[in-house]
Every structure is written in structure tokens, then in C-alpha cells.
Length: 294
Ligand code: UTP
Image 1: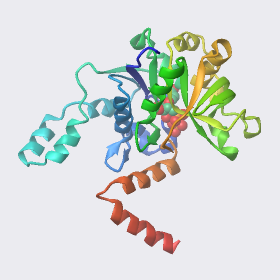
Image 2: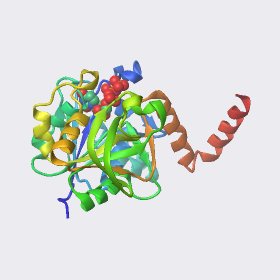
Image 3: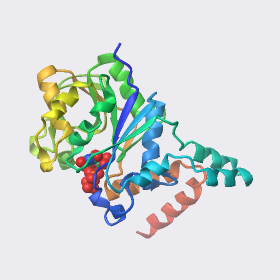
Image 4: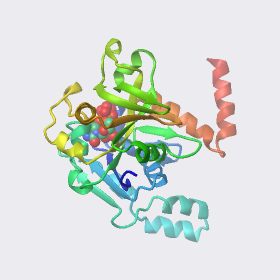
């Protein structure tokens, strides 16, 4: 049985340029799907998977993220007085226990690999999950990360979340070079970051969930810049696949929304609106109305 995964890294130090000017003063992770910020979805997924230590790699301008997880006594008292128990419940869900959450700074946005490396001292010698809040995974049962932890218990080593992507869109992702496949689990002989579509070794794209063994930090220590001039996490995982042969892709059951892009964010907003019993009927009627007019 693989060592238990108890910690998760949330790299939130990116510049979020695709959402400028909104992200000039609002961290992308605070943008909401209906009534919850993206970061809350990521935290709920991690909790569902049994994670109890949360490490945020942050940057300048992200203090509202830290505040989001604090107590809000004035607001809580007011909701208590007004008997708004449901709202109070939702608010209290956002409070994190003292010491459960740690913040570490990435001084400069040098890439996802560099952001993960910044958390090395807080992780020490155990496997760690990495969750990118841009990627929302909606499932009908176990969360995306909980499914990956099950796969980790089965095969150990390093696991990346995988999803099949058809056509030229594959060139926007890290892509698995597969050696073999057993059901939902793909053994990788390598990974390539944003290949030209014609050179993509498969249509298995890597999306923003990882379970990584601590050896990743040694690889990241000497990492050079890769695609886009950034220190890429994909390149470090590729190194492990090639030298240790201990990297697997896991095809999760669920729907993934790319909330790092405007269209993906809008799709996620509509999908989560439709999932909300208070909004479903009104929203459905509206969608039907405008669809008829287009
Ligand atoms: P993205 O590639 O989406 O970059 O990062 P970004 O800066 O967030 O957004 P755009 O592309 O400029 O619009 C993927 C994840 O890695 C984190 C981001 O915060 C995001 O969660 N990241 C990226 C860092 O923490 N540090 C970095 O240097 C780069």
C-alpha cells in the first residue's frame, strides 16, 4: 500500500493574464462559479479525498485569498441574529482550522514547476497532491482527487490526471507518451508539454491534478526553463517517467471545466447554475429562450 497522501499544494501564484483586467486586483482563484470561488471547489475536492494539510503557493496581490479562509465574526454574528442558518453554515464551511493551511510565496511567476518547488520544505518526505484551481472536475460520486488516490494506492509512484482530447486542441496540454494501458490507468514512458498537434504522442492530455512523490523536488531543484520560457512541472514528471518508470496517467470519471479560459469559465458557470436546484428552472427557461433567438 502506498504512503497516505495528506498534504496538497495549491499553486495560486500565476498572473492570470487571460482574465485581465479582472485579475488586476482580484486573484483568479476568487472568481466565482455561482456563489463559491474556484478555490472553494478545490478545497472541497481535497477534503473529500482525505487531505488535511493545505499549502498555498501565493504571490503579491493574493491577500484576499488568505482572508477568504479566515473567520468572519461580524458576518457570522449577524447571520446568527437574523436566523439565517443555511447561509451561516455555508460561511462556516469556509473557515479553516488553525494551522491546517500554510502560505508560502513564489517571488516571481517562473512557472508551475517552480511554484511547486517553492513548497518543498513544507512537504518533506511524503507524497503530495497538487491541485490547479483552474481545473474544476465535476463528478457524480467520488471527487477527481479521491479517485486518483485510489489509483495511487494501487500502483504507487507519481500519478497525473488524464483526459482524452481530440484534434488540434491537444497542443494546449501536457501530453502522455503511453507505454501501456490497464483500464483507467496508463503507464507513461514520458510526457511532452504543449507539443505541436502533429507530434503529440497520444490524445491523453494531462490536466491539473497530480500526486507526486517527494523525488519531484530533487528534479525541480535543477530544472531549466521549458515551453513558454517557464519551469514546467510536466518536464520534471517526464524526467521521472524516463529515469524511474514510475509515472501513470489516471483517466478520471467526471467532467472537467477549464476555468483558466474565458469560454471554459462560462461553460462551468452555466453547468453549475444548472446543477443548483434553486436556479435550474429559471436558467433552463432562459437558455431555451436565447437559444431560440440565436
Ligand atoms: P496558468 O498556466 O493557467 O497561468 O497556470 P496563470 O498565470 O494562472 O494564467 P494565464 O495563463 O496568465 O491566464 C496554471 C496554474 O499554475 C499556477 C497558476 O496560479 C495556476 O493555478 N502558477 C503558474 C503559479 O503558481 N506560478 C507560476 O509561476 C505559474
